[in-house]
Image (cartoon, rainbow, N blue to C red; front, side, top):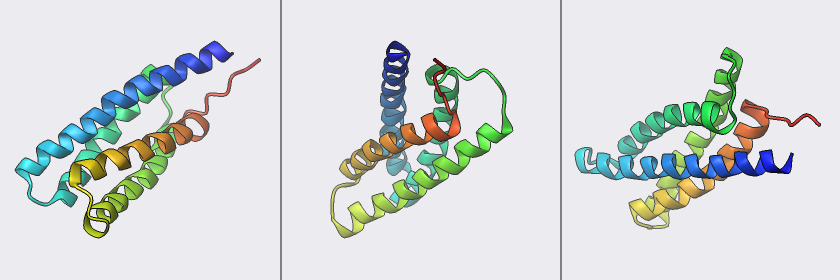
Length: 130
């Protein structure tokens, strides 16, 4: 049981690093194209949330079944963290005056932790049977 949890957590960290890198990289790239960082962030979040769903479903939690309920639970959970990411970025950039990229890195770190909790216990509900 402990080995399965460690493997799952290791895979989540691996895919979390990959999708976080995509999140930060796409945000930086879109800022070069779109002058408004808020629009760049929303586009980035939508793209990355879709990619993260498939990474979590198939590579981390290894869920094979197709479930509309699961997908809607994912959307609901990630909508919460999308709002947190969006508002948090605005607060860090506009009110605390932290650079855009550093703000994005801080927010991504916090969101990854919350997303893992939501994914494991709410969306994919991977309870280990003894």
